[in-house]
Length: 113
Length: 114
Image 1 (cartoon, rainbow over the protein chains, first blue to last red):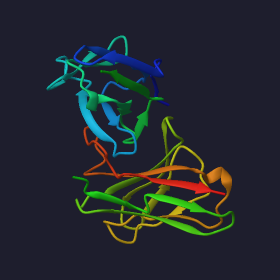
Image 2: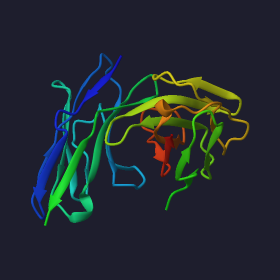
Image 3: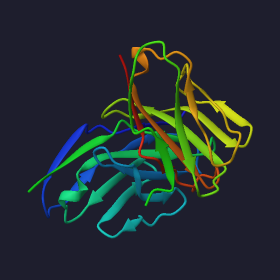
Image 4: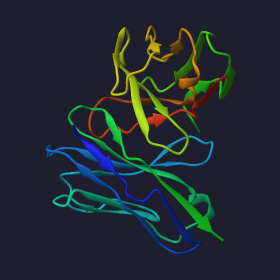
């Protein structure tokens, strides 16, 4: 079975600076997608960014980008120019042939003004 | 901007009561899911459905049951609530079951059983 590991339970960053959230996963599949979701306090979980395993180019969405290392099974999220609204729980997730999303444990990100 | 709705948002109920958590989506998605999440913790899949009259148990064993009589509606029922059921329940849907199809989440129902 696939597993997703986020080794940083909590992270903090100064407003306007850059922070990187780590994620590793374990799978024997070659065709899969990886996702980062954001869950603000008491609000809806939303998709931040996704990456196809067959694409070598790292996905980017405005201030959010990933560093996808397929051989190392690593999928980190970089947030540039951090804003107060970025404060949330961030979940890394995997979706392969079983078509079910497998989540990591989450990282709580705090933005310091 | 949510197209997937969960009610109630918060529920406090006594042990032994029967409860139904509602989930509806207006996107016409075939795939729907229920996740259980303790505060600040990871999500665990407890039920999913790939279409009308199709329901499956997820990876985490749950005493709850679900039904899918209409595409847009995927309610979760607990016949006899217990304090161990206290948690947040998140409903989600996806356009299709493919690897690249992201999940769209509702706001969640935070259940407390006293």
